[in-house]
Amino acid sequence: MSADLARAIKTASQSLKHVLRPRFSQVGIDDRTVTFTNLVGSFRLDTGEIVKVRPKTDHGQDWAGSVARLLTPNTRVGITGSSHSRRRESGADSALAVAIRIEYGRRLERALRSDGPVQAYERVSETTHRLRGRLQVTDWLRTAALKPTDFPVVRDELTIHNDFARAMALVAEAFARSTASPQLASKLHRLASNMTVGESIPARVNPAVTSRDLPPQWAKFDTAWDIARSFLNNRSLMGGPGRWHGFEVSVEPWPLLEELLQRALQTIVRQGLVPGVVNVPPKNRYGLLRGTSGLTVEPDGVVMGDGRTLASFEAKYTTKVRERDHVFQAVTTAAVLQSPLAVLVYPGDEGVHVEDVAGHNGNPGHLATLGLGMYRYGGLASDIENAKKIADAMVTNRLVIDPGA
Image (tube, rainbow, N blue to C red; front, side, top):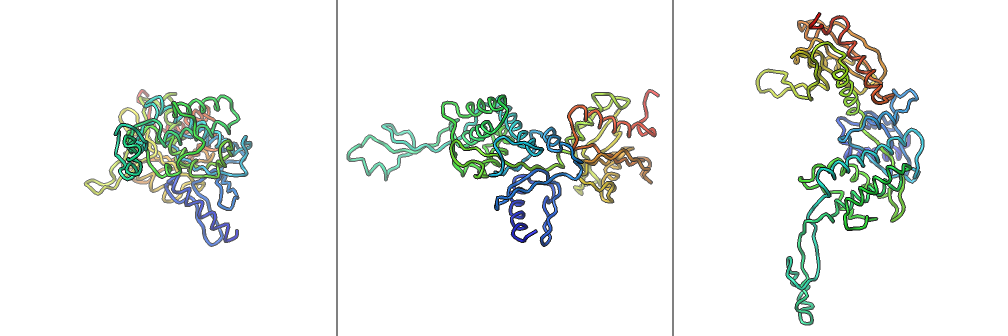
């Protein structure tokens, strides 16, 4: 590609990096060759062009719809405005834009139900007959001879009418006006009103608010604020009061693969697909060396049964199945947890492949690799399909022994 286009992509990728905070680099530029990794969706360049990144493993499926179904309250998203985005989008990429509107509504509603509207200290300047605040002496002296009891004062006031509340209300209203769903639009209108009780929903907000973090006491709004801030940082999204444009959405898919794995493991427990008393503990770090070296391993998933580890899992967002480093990590983690089975999980549709592991006294004795079909994910039916695939890998070849057998 041209040098100018490569520079524009590099600039845009730096902005995305600040918002998405990915685990590893998402855009690599070598001379005029650009490689995208750990990134799907679309984003706008300063030149006005749009970059669309599709996963290699989608095989023509509704990959954006699958990604949308895997979004969680903690998913970070990158949002950029586009003059080419239409008010009522169509096509595969629109699923992400629709999903972001829905997810923003969920996050904002959850926070409002828990804590009510955001209250923050705002600087209030007014002229009053009572000294309620700090007197602006210079301003008062200018008019004291004619109006000695008019006091220009400044004070900090705790109020729900603050820049944070106005900003999140504005974004809710923008999403409401640009969605094709009447039900979603109604919900977002209501949330915008609830954020600015007693005030009209603003058409503009103080641009400096996007550089500020929410007060710690309003942490419940953090995930909604992440989306709102990403939206507001792109002025091209709104050309003025009453004008609401479409937008491009990009996400880091690796955490979504881990979410897909966790849903499958929880389904194993609910469906009783593995013999014994089985549970899935929360993610945790485990010491690799005895002592205080600080070296740890953190599996992406663990299945416990009858007080022992049955399998440990590592999710790898790549099409290169069973890479050397992946095998080392999976086997080492399983050894630390004394797990008989180490599992490498990929986003594609690969079948189950099991190999014997040398040494380790059977912990692990086997390494399994499999794909969970991330880009054809369809909800509960996919969770059950993936759970059965994992359970079969655990139960076959007596990798899991039925304690009642």
